[in-house]
Image (cartoon, rainbow, N blue to C red):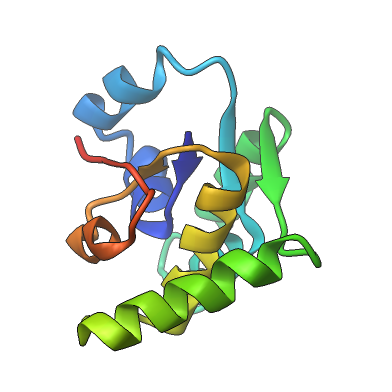
Length: 125
């Protein structure tokens, strides 16, 4: 499964229902995009040092997925599908969705707009 930014934040906050959800995963993944959003959020956090240490420890056991040339077709298709349906989602989330489709993995997120993306499964907690 791929952890979206809000899942990363909830995991860092030791959200018990989320911890129970990820416990069964063989390996946790996140995206370079979500990491950028998370790091951006840290800039204004009073717990910045603590959360940066948590992130460093998390990344030792997680795999980071980054867009590459193979991601481009999924990204373009998702943007077009959503535009034609009149249901666009934020550009960063299009990249995250494209990585999830490319790697055939569900996204762990509270953002229900991922449900609008064809061929994508969103997990909530």
